[in-house]
Image 1 (cartoon, one colour):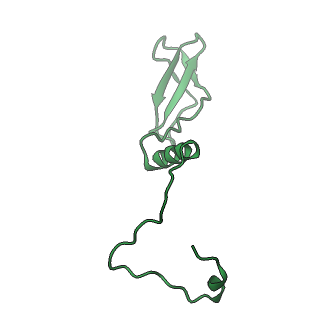
Image 2 (cartoon, helix red, strand yellow; image 1 turned 135 degrees about the vertical axis):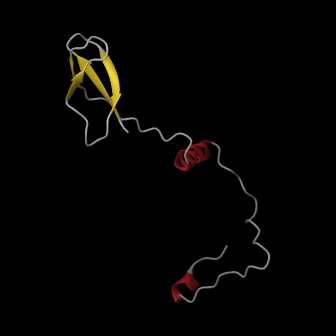
Image 3 (cartoon, one colour; image 1 turned 90 degrees about the horizontal axis):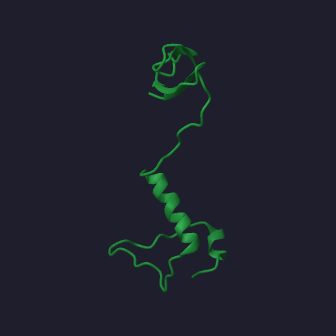
Length: 95
């Protein structure tokens, strides 16, 4: 459930969790008991710890510290090299 911020006329601020379909525009203040209105806040968009965050971190790191290779990676044994039948691929430079 998302968390929503509320503020009453006395200046009290608090967060409350509601389902998106049931969030009220006003609720009772948990501190002083007055009517509190929902306020606009920045969304929480952190994806720290996910695969997407790791990918972003690795790509940023490679911009400053690129990995240097001196040869092509070895092919797995028993796997044949892929061949193409497209005649346009024959015009491409070979490594």
